[in-house]
Image (cartoon, rainbow, N blue to C red):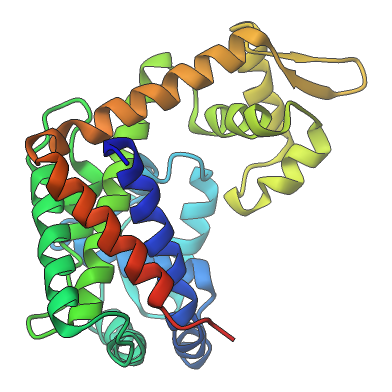
Length: 299
């Protein structure tokens, strides 16, 4: 077990916890008349307060999602009186919006608070360790920078939150710092977020018809024309070839570029953790693994 095993342990614990509070979150969204994407965008708004938010700001972290998708969601939230215009296609949170977030999150926090995965002492130990790691990430140099994790920290639950809620918050922050690391790793290549998303998909799938790429990445809100433009970007760099049958295939050079970016992501991500001893890292990984395995199975 080594430092490279830390993020997989963090990610696994983070994803294992999500299904346990998702039903409460879905119920809250239905009651408020919100789709999942609308709520998650609304939930980001307090992390920017008091500054207004627009689609371009949201695309700093959500680089793979189309600007038009963000603009649609922002407009939708404004029409529901959850956001108000701040001019220049920017928005701020309304009192109704803030109250809606609190009303949805209250049962979500209650669902998490009812879970006792470890002993009280172990839960406290895990929360303390994760906070120390997250604090170290907040002090990271540039690259990778700390934009994502800073905004995640600003969404911390109020004082008095349960130990489980705190653990979920620190897992969220440590996952956000992974985004900081990965964004820093690929943005120097000067391609669009959608193009990088397509390259990553082809890195996994090797080759896909353009139509299937659109289907798999539909949630990002990019059009067929935008996907074709993205593939053309990749083709010009020699990372992807496009056949006459409109099948995109990653090249050996594209595989190398994507692998280098993954290695750079890992290097950036683990910089803050090198100040911790091997024992600290191992004990934290062991606790995360025990935590994940002790979570109740979602129905």
